[in-house]
Amino acid sequence: MERRTGTVSRGIRCPIIREGDDIAGIVVESVVGASEAEGFALHDRDVVAITESVVARAQGNYASVDAIAADVRAKLGGETVGVIFPILSRNRFAICLRGIAKGAKKIVLMLGYPSDEVGNALVSLDQLDEAGINPYSDVLTEAKYRELFGENPHPFTGVDYVRYYGDLIRACGAEAEIILANNPREILKYTDCVLNCDIHTRARTKRILKAAGAKFVVGMDEILTAPVEGSGYNSKYGLLGSNKSTEDMIKLFPNECFDLVEDIQNRLFDRTGKHMEVMVYGDGAFRDPVGKIWELADPVVSPAYTKGLEGTPNELKLKYLADNDYADLKGEELRAAIEAAIRKKDDDLVGSMASQGTTPRRLTDLIGSLCDLTSGSGDKGTPVVLVQGYFDNLAD
Image (cartoon, rainbow, N blue to C red; front, side, top):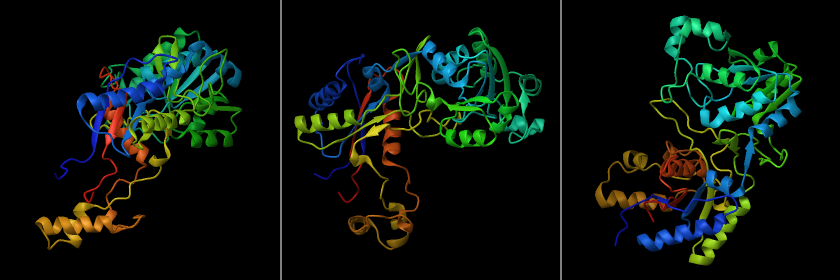
């Protein structure tokens, strides 16, 4: 029978995972159990993806706000600290800010505008235009921001982040001063000890600040890179990718987990005889067209994956072939010609007109984004996603 489906993404239900659990065993049992219960087969090159949250939970990779405070104090001196370019998030950053504020006497908080790095807006572009404000050059105090723009609650959460972050800093015993600016050098007018909290632009920000004469420049990726009084840590990403666990604890991005994905791959092969790919995934990399939020608040989509997920897609654009190379064909003759073209395609189609318009992104970013949308972040109970047929094409 002719196969009539392409890529299929399935959320796999699992037990609630706790610290110390054998997550590799749970993943294998859950995938195989779902296959047997629901009557679908497993295949070579299926992708089994595990959300980073349950990996970190199994690792017990947690830290308290006091551990954050101790590391901030040790690395930035504990006096006046400039905290620049944080994202606007109660889940992602507010809990970290509590620890940061506990590690300093004063926080000068510099917010990027009109929106943060991942698209959460403090003010709209239309409002800036109306006020005659140039976000590339103009620096706004908190008072000036209020005078020009008043209250601007987040459209999804209803939170006024300027007020929320200021109140949070003061509640932790530190003095708070807030400015809005996009040139990292502006913070040096207030302090030469800087914690830059941007995610994907962090290397450039550090370079600019160091060149401008900052005494200390520490990124979020450099806080909790080692245990502090027995805390969890992430040696590569520090606080980046962390989430709120409780009012006083964060769950960090999972630590080294390449051994985990290889272990799961090997166990799946032993159990099923199929060579599957395995990855850990966090936030997907996509932008919401309504809220304008770019989802990726983690430092990477996938912190660990098996070798078969290296690289980018190497695909032909079917509609280009149909409209150009085979414009005079139709029906089964057209299908046969396109299938033949797929079978004969080069191993590297970079620069080829016939591949123009295909998505030039890493496989792990594409598949991780699919998995993030499949699993969701709420109560679906599917922290494992099985993706089948991703590497198939029309000629298979």
